[in-house]
Length: 379
Image (cartoon, rainbow, N blue to C red; front, side, top):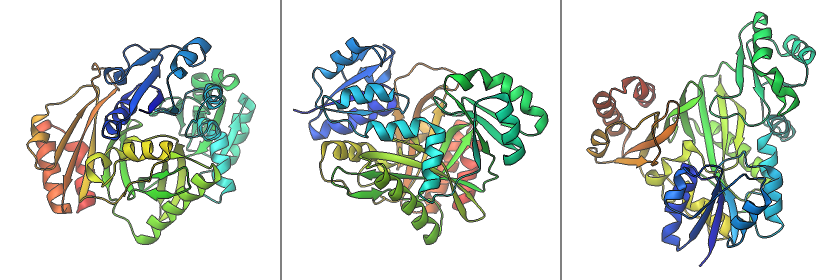
C-alpha cells in the first residue's frame, strides 16, 4: 500500500487524505502544530520543517511527498526529493514562494502582470513609488497569505507608515511593490498536470474576497470563450515552464476584459473546493492521481456550484443541508477570528436554481452580504 507524505497538516491535507481513501492510499502528515486538523485522519509528525530528525522520521515510511501549503522551506523539500519523489518539484515551490521570482516568470512567459519593483531599502521604496505610482501595495516577497504581510499605499503620504509596518522584513523575507489593479473581477484557474505531461483545467472560477480572505467562489465563472481560453493558456504555459506535477491555481485579475496574473499557488486551492461535489473528479483526487503517476480524471462540471467559506466559527449546518444540492465541510478546527474553519458548497443544475438556493441559505444564516454578489453575477 502506497503512503503519501504531506508537508503541512491543515484542511487541505485533511481533504487530500479523505480523497485518497477510495484509492487505497495511506497518508503521513508533518506539521509544526500538534493541533493541525489533518492529524485527525492520518498519523502526524510534529516538528519544525528544518529539523533533520523530524524530517527523517517523516520520510521513514513515505513513498511520495507533496504539500498542503507553499511556505514549506524549499531546502526541506529538496532534502526529501533526494530520497523519494516530491511533487510539485522544489523548484516550482521555490518560485511560488518568492513574489519577485513569480512575477518575473510571469513576465518572461508573456503573462501580463501589474507593474512591480523589488524593495530592499527605504530609498528603493521612494524610487519605486515614483515609477509605479499610487495607489499600490507593499508586500513581503515571502510568507504572506490571506492578506497578511501587505500594506496598501493610497498616497505618497502613506510611504512612512508602510515602511514602519514592513520595512524591518526587507532584510529577512524581502519586499516587493506592486501596482494596484482596479479590477472588475477576480478569477482563478485551477489546473492539474500529470507526470506524463497530461494537462487539464477545471472551469474558470470567479472569486470574492473580504479583508483579503476568500469569501465565495462561483463555477463556472460567467465569462466569454476568449477570456476562458486565455486564462487556460496562461496556466498551461506556467505548468510546462515549471515541469509542474500536481494541482495548482493561477489567480487572476480581470480589468476591462484583460487578464493580469496575481499569483501562483502550488497546491490544491481554496477556490477549487467546489470541485468535490461540482466536478466529475475533485482537485484533491486529481492531485493524488498526478503525484502517483495515475491517469487524470475528468474535470468537467456537474451542474453549477458556489462555495461559501466559513471564517472564524462554523454557522448552523441546517440551512445548507436542507438544500438538495447542499454539502457541508467542517475542518475540525477550534473557532478563532480570521481562521478558515469550514466551507459549504451549493450545487444545482441551472443558474436560477443555484441563485434561489443561495438566497435561502444567505437569509437563514444572516449571510446576505456574502451571497449577494454571487446572486447578482448569476443574474
